[in-house]
Length: 165
Image (cartoon, rainbow, N blue to C red; front, side, top):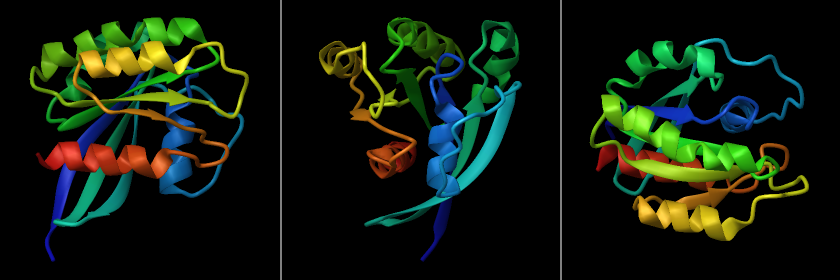
């Protein structure tokens, strides 16, 4: 069976848990405290789909505004993107359209998933607006917890599916 390589990106504000979410999947462990990503970080993960094996090259984008000019070059060649927000921080959800626009400027036909992370904590952001946003851009919506692992496999399965479409 052939393995396809596909680049995917994780984007969203700083401290929404992108790196922790990725590490939970790729390394099988939760790390509560982390230093913020500087620029971009890289991971790989293999997903088995009914039609073959997909090796995801995962690009974890720094969420701080001062890295914006650096990020645009890293989006090139991506096949799908996860727009991640923190369900305990409403403003991180409000910034998702800006993240989407930033990516679409570089990859006009990018496919997306929308991810509400940190569902194990006290949420301030309800699911309905996020589901509406996801539906409005034609993206699947997932809720995850990097701590418990809930929903993470579904996110990576969906990214792999989108990446090979």
